[in-house]
Structure formats: C-alpha cells, structure tokens
Length: 484
Image 1 (spheres, rainbow, N blue to C red):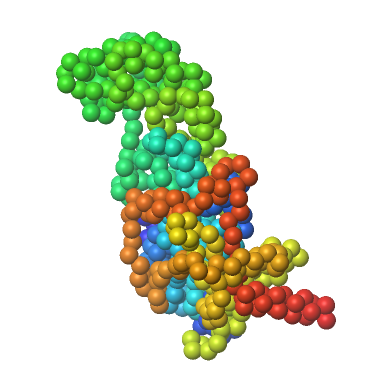
Image 2: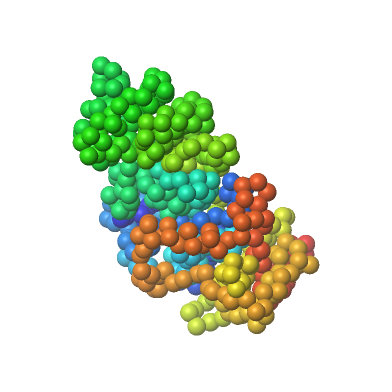
C-alpha cells in the first residue's frame, strides 16, 4: 500500500546515519531486536501482526530523487545545511543488505522476547527502525484487541466497522487488516477489503429508514434491492415495532423464496432488547433470522451480554476495536544487541543498562525457542543467543534468577523465521485470512489461564543459562565502569 517508505522515519535516524557515514562506521555489522515489555490490555499475550508490511518496506525501500531533494533542503538551527549532500547522494545509491528474521503473523508473543531481529550494516539497521516499529506496534495492538473481542464472542461472528472512528485513513485500513488477522469475520472497510482481499460486510444506516415515509416502507424497499444481503436496522424509532415490521418483510420475502438474514440493534439495553426481538421472531416462525448488535462494544461488554444469556448471534465492533480504546500504544522498542567488524568476525554482545532491571535489554544475536507438551499446549519460551546455542533446556526468569523452569523432554520449535536475506525477501507471503488461521492455532495452543481477561497467568519466558550469565556479566561490567 505504501510502496515508498524511506522517509517514514524520525529525523534522528537520518542524523545518526550521517554520523555513521561520516565516521566510517556505516558498514559496521549490527544486530537489533524488537520487543515489548508489557502485554497490551493487561492481558496474557499479544498477537504479532504487521510483518507483511515490514516485508513490503524492505522490498520497496529506496530514496527517490524527490526524497533526496527534500533532505538536501533541510536546515540546521543556524540556517546551515543539516545533511551533507554527499551523504544524501549515498542514500539514493544504497541497496539494503539486511538479514531479517521474524515471527509469522498470528503468532502469540510475550514480553521481552524478540518479535523481529534485524542484522546487517548498522546504518541500514538504524534507518528502517521507525517504519518497522510503526507497522508492528500498531497492527499487533489491534490484532490482539480483535483476538480478545472474538474470544468473548465465542461462536458468534464479529464484524469490524470502525473506519469512521479510526485514526485517519491509514490507521483505518491497517486496523481492518489487523482485525481480520486477530479473528474478525469481516470488515466494513471497502478499501481494506480490496487492498488485502478481506471479506466485507454491511447493511444500512438509520438514515435509510428516515429517508422513507415510514419504517415498513424502508424495510420493504431494502429487501427488494438487497434480497441476499438483507439485515434490517430495527432501532431507528422503537425496537419492538421495528421487529414487527421486520417480521412482516420476512414473511413477504419467504413468499418470494427469499430469507431475511438478520436484524440489527444499535442502541439501548442490548440484553433486554435482543431477548424481546428473539421472542417475537421465534413466535413468528423466524428462528433462522439472526440478531446482530452494535454500539460501542468491546470484549468486556460482549462477555457481560453473553453472561446475561442475551440471544445475540453476531457482533458489530467499531470504535473500541480500531482505536484500541483502553490502551493507545503497544510500546514495542528496537534495541541494539550485538556488533561486529566484519561478516566473518565474532559478534560482540551489547545491552542497554537502566536503573530499573526490567528495562535492561538482552545481549547477543537473539533467537527464541518455543516449547510445547504432548497436548500441543505451549509451556515456555527460551530466549538465547545464536552464537552460543543452548545445551540445556532450562530457562531462567530474567528478573528473578532463582525462578527457573526445566523444559527437558518437551518438543520445541524456532519462532523467528527468515523474512529477508541481504535485503531480498525470502518468506512466502500469506493472506490475512491465512494469518488468521495461524492466530486461531496459536490461541488454541495457549492455556486458558493465559487467556482470561482478569489477572491472567504469566506465560514463562526465560533466558538460556549462558545468555543469563552473559547479561549479568555485562551489567556488572557496565556499572563498574560508571563508578570508576
């Protein structure tokens, strides 16, 4: 969708890039990883999303003539040229040489473990950071919210229709994609439907009813125009009378060999009104007519309605999904973890040290193993450094070294998969619906205790023992230097 994204970045990426270029460090090899520190929505997991857009970013990455002209026009504080024109010209000639590994879209991921690893010339690693984070942070947030909403809905279909309340056109399009990957059955967003081959759905608004002489006339006209996609919005004036008018139209449709697909309620006490509607429809012999509800729904409202026994078949979720209403950002970060002088030299591990141990990063060229039991339930993830492969299956809590878990005997798989090699995309792109199936498989492998909304159990993510020792050694060394 965004074929040219070189300028989708923060200015400091470019000023750092020039500094690398000017000091002869542009080709120094580096490894970065993207992770987040807390699960969104106070939940027990996140659903990785946006990786297809990372692939698109890399595949089409280039600085155009117009990009370079703009960059050369930037001025520093004293009115001097900000960026060296020769440096800008080098950007125009740059070919990405990055190796990128990432979890497939729809994978459940957890705090502190790598979701993406980027290795290659440090200038290039740095210059793709902002766009990469922009894609993955936002879509992962929305896909996770959608997964929670769909979990609450159970077997009921969920339609996403938040475009009009989304954070701009781009936010709306990518929110729809992420919502489908998270589990939604359809979207109202036609642009996203075309761009990403998503199933689209929609009915009519209150204005359709208001534009007619009376509600019954409006329903009849819509049924004649849309006999195979007829869902009637019944709360423009009064739900009970709306249901009765819908019943009249449904009987007329039956006489023509057609069927009313459903009725939608968009306001009021949804539990009470849906029960009234269901009773009237069933008494009229229309048990096949579905009841769809909307109106500022989220996972908690849907769960409450289901707990009350509301006879609702499908859910329309908008604002609170596409805006991630109760958490505006994921907070994923991208940190340097290793460098080396050449492609065949030894990696030197690095970490960021903070006054808070929880903000200290992990050193090395990081990878993740996921372990599962005989029932295919996932039971723990091991973060390790590829230049020191695991010899034992023990993970150590990075925030409490006394907490360890022995995963010996369990099967495991590698989470990070090749996305790009030397700047060339090597993974096979999957559709949003295929990624949705991966989401379903991943969530099915996650224990119920990790999926509950209130106080979910913490999924175990730990460091391999040698990586833990390396991290502790580097922290002690760094703190000693600071005191010297």
